[in-house]
Image (cartoon, rainbow, N blue to C red; front, side, top):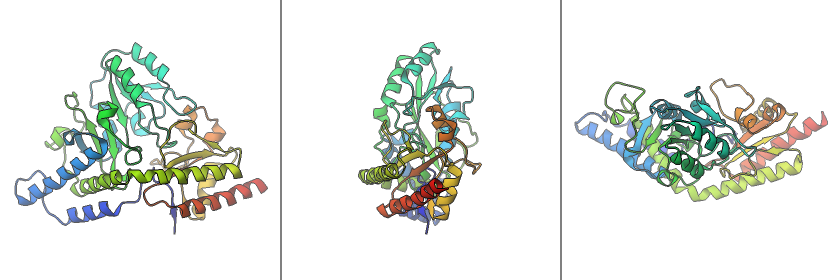
Length: 366
């Protein structure tokens, strides 16, 4: 049986989400139809919209369902008539690739966006710029200073987009309190199905659709809604919100892994350790022990972790996030990410430490 510690790539589906999807699949009807089955389909979609909005501290009318976080990020960055786009260098590839022309704001060695550099960039930017800074990094778990980002952007007349895909369900999320204009979520990061996400947008933004056709999702995202996926998203959002108090348990497990790993390997680097982090995420590196070697050895031992972000290539590549934090190529190339979630246990950490400890001792003896 595999010990699964790669929740930041994709969380196992929650029973509540699976049940909601199964029930939705058993129902006929298109949510755009006016007959009884259509109205029932619409009700499922709107119930899920309210559940997702509640998780995010937003209004249901702000939620536009998409095919996932990538589409939502693209809609945010390409759908606004921004005079200039500014993004942190630590953003997910779905942000960086959506706006390749964007001005990139550096990170500090702790993985935080450099606020002085952002202030200078905003001062030089014309009014109507768009700033995109994630709430928490998918590789290191570092939580960004969104309050300061929003304050700087507001003073410069800029919009703010926040990719909250990794933060949702792990820390309390309140879009209204954050003050951001746009916020991205993804179902499969919090125990919902893959292939469904959402962009939350404050009313009044001049947001234009990227995908055109019918009038679904208030004409912001054409195409028949993925009703089973949306139902699963809503159920997972409700369960994740309910389980937020249990995140303290994950922080204890994460801290135990890091403490015992540091005893075994004092030269281990724990990225972002000096900054606020998600309770479930640990990114560590041991120069001289390539990430690919660690991943294969741990996989053979029945433990699934990753090296930074999960990407479509399926290859292990040095992390652009760690490089932006000042990590050497050797460090970036030896980093692995351990990410816990709703079904993680102390026994999982026991297995991880045993497998990684065996690998470390073999490497030292070689």
